[in-house]
Length: 238
Ligand SMILES: NC(=O)c1ccc[n+]([C@@H]2O[C@H](COP(=O)([O-])OP(=O)(O)OC[C@H]3O[C@@H](n4cnc5c(N)ncnc54)[C@H](O)[C@@H]3O)[C@@H](O)[C@H]2O)c1
Image 1 (spheres, rainbow, N blue to C red):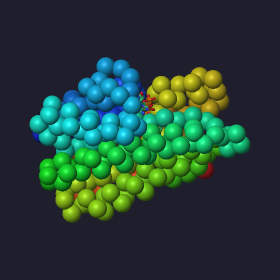
Image 2 (image 1 turned 45 degrees about the vertical axis):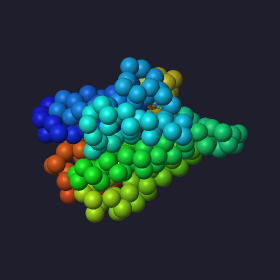
Image 3 (image 1 turned 90 degrees about the vertical axis):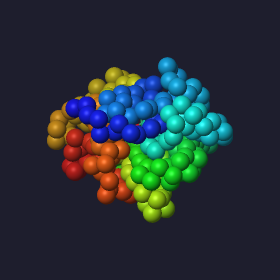
Image 4 (image 1 turned 135 degrees about the vertical axis):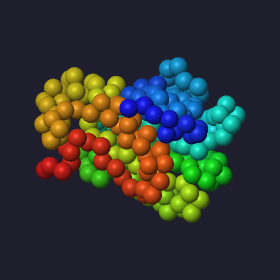
């Protein structure tokens, strides 16, 4: 339910043209935040590939100018694809790390002076169930998402003294354009995840966005450095 609990927040959301990022931008706005959106596609405030070395610095500069400050970061941009280990070329492995990890590192690093100055900064990174587990064909993706969780914990330790909380949301199987091809081409894969979750359904982008909004709010002020599962209970079952 929408509220005004984020009414003083000034947030950047990346990957905001689609899926979880789009739902998150909408939810933060519904709760009163100013939101500056970024993506490589779609109708966003900052258009560009966030792996370009200077892209995150330019994004932050433009966001601060547009909103009059910056206190909240939600880097949702990400890529995934199944790739068996044999034949997995270097370029694709590195690309996954670049988008899912290095671009997140650069955004957080370059935003840190603003988040420290705000005194109550919030960072919510996007991990995955594969931040804690592995799966066939997901070596690059899982490596990147394990790394994002570790990165989140270290940044939480470093920025906590400045009032910044840093958490990592770990979604389960969510129905977005990222997962649509797999769920369409492999109905059994969809059924597997629906049944694995005790709540017996796939997640929707809004299921994740609502938790991200909570973590950005004052209600989550004493919560930092954690991976937060939002998976319908899927990962409690073998
Ligand atoms: N959908 C799921 O089941 C699921 C589960 C766990 C984690 N996640 C994570 O959630 C995040 C959002 O995924 P989604 O499912 O909403 O996917 P999505 O494909 O719907 O959205 C991802 C967005 O990121 C953007 N993007 C990708 N590379 C970019 C780049 N280099 N520069 C700028 N923008 C770029 C894309 O254009 C797209 O709009 C990702 O980090 C993903 O790994 C998704």
